[in-house]
Amino acid sequence: MDDQPEPASRHTTLDRWFERMLGDHGPQTFGSGWFSGLLGLILGLGSFCAVLVFQFPEWLTTTDLRGAYSIDFMRGLLALALVCSFFFSTLNILLRPSKKLGITGITFASLAIILGGAGIEVDYQGDAPIHVGLDWLVLNVVLLSLVFVPLERLFPLRPDQGTFRAGWTTDGLYFIVSHVLVELLTFFTLLPATLVSQAWQAEAIGIQVKALPLLAQVLLIMLIADVTQYWVHRGFHRLRFAWPFHAIHHSTRAMDWLAGSRLHVVDIIVTRALILLPLFVFGFAERALYIWLVIVAAQATFNHVNMRINLGWLEQLIVTPRFHHWHHAVRPIDKNFAVHFPWIDRIFGTFHLPDGKWPDALGIRGDPVPEEFTRQLAWPFRRRG
Image 1 (cartoon, rainbow, N blue to C red):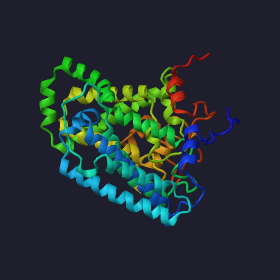
Image 2: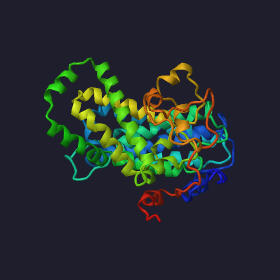
Image 3: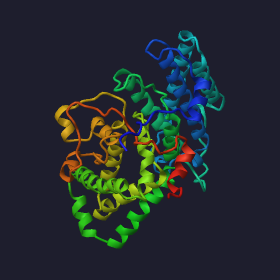
Image 4: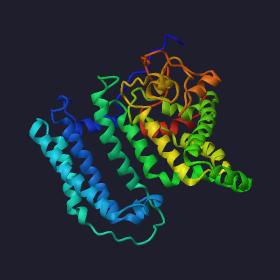
């Protein structure tokens, strides 16, 4: 087995299509016009999608977020995004020989203005029978890309890994699906926990738990969720029928802020459903659960970044990118399952964090998982001899 070649990055068909449409062979350093073009495109496309959300809120907004929006504040953000999109796209056109990014960004921003721009009226017609979370997608992709793309270029772990590295479109499709279908996924993940907690009817426990200070509840949620997730995660690695679903996540050979999105829908539903079971049974306050959801989402994104970060003694207390990169290493395997607290792996004998070192290769030995998004979705269900 040891003589098998290490996984090698390969661009997908969709990767190559985007490269033909928007790519060029110029430098991607600050001042070259590349970053300004990318920012202009992200903000222009985000503005266009935001206008669609304003036009069709009953179809394109997430139910739980709908009541939290301040229309005036969102209009202000949209206006700012449009102005910045035109500015950065124009800067790209002035600085870079290839004008593809700049022209595309201006095109999307112009379409957003034609459709109404920041002054578009919101005509809410009540809830639609089917709706998708385009609002949630736009908020996340704009915020996360604006934060992590520059940081990964300024402090890269692997400087030769570009922003549009091999497989980025596959991870992008997982990111889109998980955000657009957030309510459908939430329904399936909450269903088991809701049914069990209703049958349990442990009101006394819930009253005592809710009486705890908010910080104590959040820390307790993190501990319970991490111990539960540890064994669910380890089960996906150990059980032959479960591993193919989780292997999709490990098939990435280039870590960055987008790589954590590569999760098969079965992996998402099973893992989240089992983690939520004990949390619902204990009856934690809704506010504490929401805070934990923000923490786990932020930590999941941060732990996959392509950034050279060494946090010293803190790495023994909280999960960091270096700890989680070793979980994705080709060798050794089955290490570092925790999401929040690395000392859980110490307790159960799966801790691996060599001083100051990062893994040389990421992925799965033998590279068995296909590259394309649709083939990955079907791959765990194929018959095996």
